Amino acid sequence: MTEAVRFEDKVVIVTGAGGGLGRAHALLFARHGAKVVVNDLGGNVHGEGGSVSAAQSVVDEIIKAGGEAIANGASVTDYEAVQGMVQQAMDKWGRVDILVNNAGILRDKSFSKMDIADFRLVMEVHVMGAVHCTKAVWPIMQAQNYGRVIMTTSSSGLYGNFGQSNYGAAKMALAGMMQTLSIEGEKYNIRVNSLAPTAATRMTEGLMPEAVLKALEPQAVVPAMLVMACEDAPNRTIMCAGAGSFEVANITLTQGVHLGVSDDTPEQLLAAMSQVTDRTGELVPGSGSGQGTLEVGKAMAAHKS
Image 1 (tube, rainbow, N blue to C red):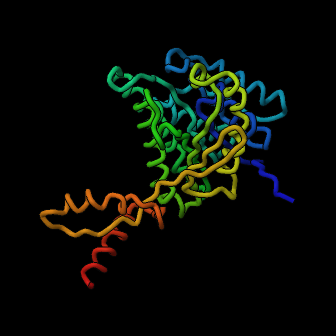
Image 2: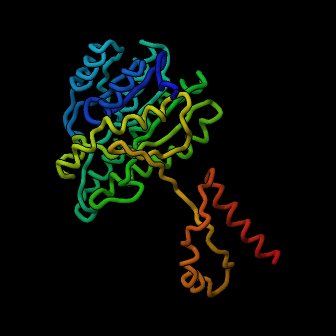
Image 3: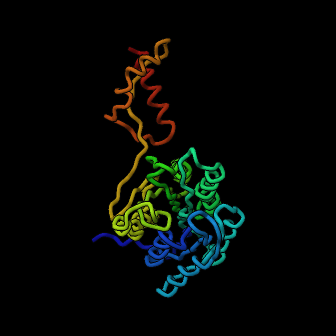
């Protein structure tokens, strides 16, 4: 029999949890026994406006169902407010075990038409928002020798999407931050993963046909979140989830080719591009040093021959 995924005695902070995917995360965490800080600024998908009422509504749902939760209306772009949110959790329950960096906004336009301010704001909310929240809980997780941090990335960052250069850049940045934090947190039993969801939320309304939106209910994504937040969670994993399907995305490195350095190396490289891009035997390096290890190894082998 499969062991139940439970979160009794665990405290989770979910940002952007007043609606959509964040709300689904918060409700299911509570149903599985967690104590939940429901954070939401209460603004629209463009990051405008604000009210704690959205977060409080989710808290009321959790309490009505017999769970424990508190509301918080901090903006993730305000580090002092984020620190206050974390302190609120510590004052209430004495620990923080899980952080779900879910808060986000959209400012979609083609790059040629996008204002720099819109690019910067999306980066501020998604990237610096996750930085602020993770930085605030990190020393707590280190001290208790336990933590689970989940970044919300996106296929728009992993693979690109027209009109979302700001959003894509932000989401790929979160995957990059995950790569390093998963290494730094390992000795403290802090596991850091990313979720790339495909879900129908306020942020996707108008972007997909109605029939597709119905298939992509947020609840179909949440099981992946629970797995990445549980005691047996993986580490340094980009989990993709949508419509009840689950996959893993990897940033890989091909075996490539060693050409050395000469006056005609650019011409040799151009001619060898099919070999350089050949994915046979591609690697998922354990850290950034894996690239250098592969390259130096090929150079040394070429030198010996």
